[in-house]
Length: 496
Image (cartoon, rainbow, N blue to C red; front, side, top):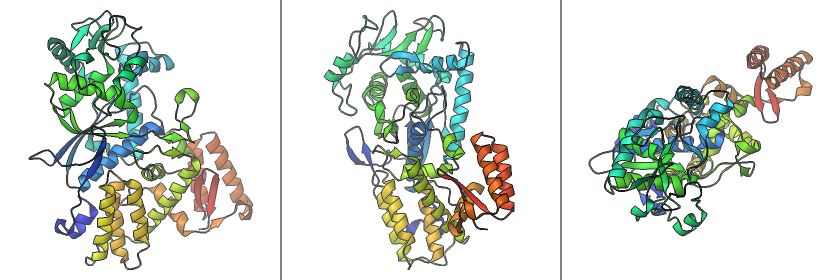
C-alpha cells in the first residue's frame, strides 16, 4: 500500500486507467487484470550470468521494478520472475557464435564442466543481486530461477513439440519448424522475408527453413543426457519452460529489451503456443530501448562500458543512476554521460534534503490540493510509465506554496513508492549527500593546509582503489568539521 493510502485511506484515492504500450499490436492498450483476480503474473528476461552486468543491462531492471511498483500503486498484486541464464546462450540469438558461459569459463581459467559453469553462474548472479539491491530493487519480492534447475522441464517441452510435429532432428540437434506456426513473427510485425534473406543455413544444411531455431544443441563434451543425445537446451526454450513451471501456461506481462523482439521473443511465442495448443503466452509485451554511453552503443568488446561499481567509485550514490534512468522514458534510447549523472545526483540530493527537513509524515488533515497533485502524478505514471512526466509533476508540486509541509512530505513519499528512490529510509551516504544541499561549498585553496593534505591523501587512496583507507580519511576529515561530496570533477568540500 502506498504512503498516500496509509495516510488518507483508499476512499480518497482517485481511480485512473492504466495503459501500457503493447508490442503485440504496437499500440497503447488498457491494462486490466485477468478475470476474477487482481494478481499480475510477470516474467522479465534476466541476465546471462557469465560476467558482471553493465549499467545498460541494469537499466532493464530499474524499468521492471518501476513497472512492478506502478502495478502495486494501482492495487494489483504482482508475482514476478526474473530468470538467470547459466548455460547455453550463444553470442548470437540466431544459434550462432560462442556459448557465453563457456566464454566466461575460459576467461577465468576454469575447465568446461557443468559444476564450474554452475559456480560461475552463481558468482555473477550474486554480483547482479548486489548491484540491483544498491539500485533499491527489492529482490526478496522476486523469484530468480536458474535455467540449469529446469533441464527436465525443458526436455519435456521439446518432446511435446516433437510429438506434435513441430520439431525435427538433425545431426546438430533438434530444431523448431517455423513453417508449422503460421503466426511466426507476429510480435513486432517482423518482416519474415527480410529475416529469411539475412539468416544463414550454412551452419546446418539440414535446416528446413532459414529461421528455424534450435530447441536442443548436441554437445558430446559438455551437457546433459537427453533422448537426442548429450547436449543442452537452446536458449529460447529455457524461458518458455520456466514461465510454464513458475507462472503457468499464460502470463499477463512479458518484458525484455528491444533486441529480443525479432528472434528470442518470437521464438518463445512460437514454441510456447505450439506446445499449449495456441493458448497466448502473454497478454502484454513491454520492451525497453537501449541505454547509450556518451552517445554510442555500450559494448564490452570495444571497452565502451560502465559498471555500477565505477559509478560508486567516482563518488556517486547508486540511486543517482536510478534517478537518471527515470528521467527518460523506457521506450526512448537514453544517453548516459557523467555530466548527466552529476545533474541527476544534484536533483536527487535536493529531494533528499526536502525529505529530511521534516520527520513528520502524518498531515493533520486532508486537502484537495494534495489530491490534485496525486491525480496529476497518477495520470502520468499510468500513461505507459511516463516517469519523466511523473518527475516533472513532483518538482512542480514542490513549488506549490499552498501545500502544507506535512502534506508535501506525505505526497513525496507516496510518489516515491513508484519511483523507488528510497526517500522514506535514506542510507548514510544519501544523508551525507542531502547535507551538501544545506551547506556552503568551500574552495580547496581556502582550506587549512592540513585539511588539503588529508584530501589529497584520500584522492590518492581512491585512485589506488584503497577503499578502507579512503573511508578512514573521510571520517577523519568529517570529524574535523568538513562535509565531503565525491563527484565526476573531484572532491567537493562544504562548511560544517
